[in-house]
Length: 171
Image 1: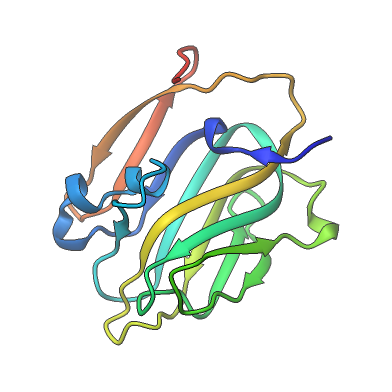
Image 2: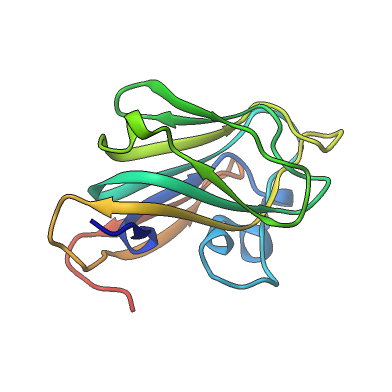
C-alpha cells in the first residue's frame, strides 16, 4: 500500500503550550495549515509536546517536521499514547529544513490512534519549540477517505486542543 499524508485523518490534536497563550498567532492549527508564514510556538519551559489522535487508526512510516533554527527539539521521542510505550527516539537537527524521520520498520505495521511527539530538551536556552510544518506519512487499514470536522478550544493553562465530530468532511 502506498504511503501518503495522514493529516486528513487527524481527529484531535493538542499542544503542551502556546507562546503568551496567543492561539490565534501561534496555535496548533498552524502545524497543519501548509503555510510557510505561520508556526506553532511553545511557551518557554520543558518538556513540550504535540499530541495527535487519528480516526481511523493509522500505520506510520515517516514524520516530517520543519523547525525554526534555534528552536528545535533535541532529546525528542515519538510515543504511542494508547500503549504507553516509546515508538522511537527522533534526532532533529537545529535548522530550518523539513526533516524526515523514519519510523522503525518493526513499528510500521502497528495501528496507532493516538501519538505524542515529546520534546524533552530544546536548542533554545529557554526551552521553546517552534514548528512551521508537521506531517505524518503512512496509511490506514480502513477504506475511509473522509475526515471529521473539527472544533478548536483553548484551555486557561495555555494548552490548545482540537476535537472532532464524526460525520462531516473538511475539504
